[in-house]
Image (cartoon, one colour):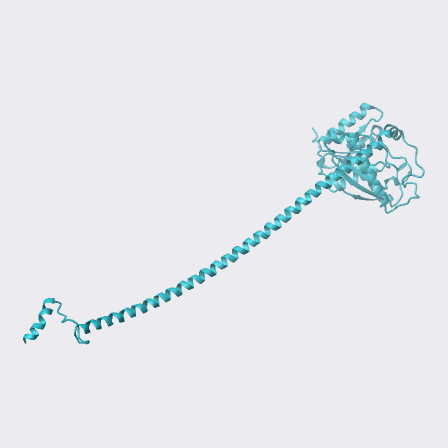
Length: 385
């Protein structure tokens, strides 16, 4: 029966959960450890590829970082671990089942094989957990970083999550064998997106600069500060550097400071450009806000004028209607008056006409026969009689 491929959003496998929970249960219940973490401003989606890098101060910090990133961000990291762990009876089976990628540190082919496997996992949307120092610090300072994490992010097109912590060196570290009680581990998380024109050296410098700056901040604000303690950086009695630490120091001693300085300069330039872009965006937003405000004011004024015009038009219409009715009434009254005057004048003219004709004012002007000839003969007939 073929097993279904595990998706990044399915969560960690049982072995990963078992190992991480056992270690964290021991730290919390047995020694009273606590973790206070500040997540990044923008949390990457759980199914987005992510390279998690952290400063390596103890043998316990990979578990603390893995547990915190899983609980806070939903990303469970597949760690890269030395291949010797896979040969431990019983424990090797758990390490393999937890999704750990083996690294044969003494062989170039082994490193390349681990690198290819990590790139493949990133391209499938998974998260890789890696300590770019390669080993724990022996004096409390950040060791020169290897370029592997930056190469992974650039080749797979993934973001980097830079996890910087302080306090984990108080147990299972080169200077503190058995954990102190009541330890507080403080932690910051920063997302770095590779630039389009960036190479592994530049990106590694940015990782180192971020870790250095955050380490200074965490150390300055650490609530349980104790400069006289053996675990307070720089360690008063540093341990002997491991072979990997000596190799890193020798390999990157000449270019380390230059790489970090170049990265800081580039970061400052990018920050300045970002600030200018932010100012432009803010100015554009202010202009848009002002334009919207003016538009709203103009719209309100237009609506006000329209309403006023409508009221004025209705008022004028009503006034015109009243005036027309008044004029019509006046015209009707005048017409009646003229009719009466005309009737009186007609009667007066008729009276005058009768008077000029010699007829009594109270007699009609004709006999009323309707025959003109009879009317003409009437006077003669009267004279004949």
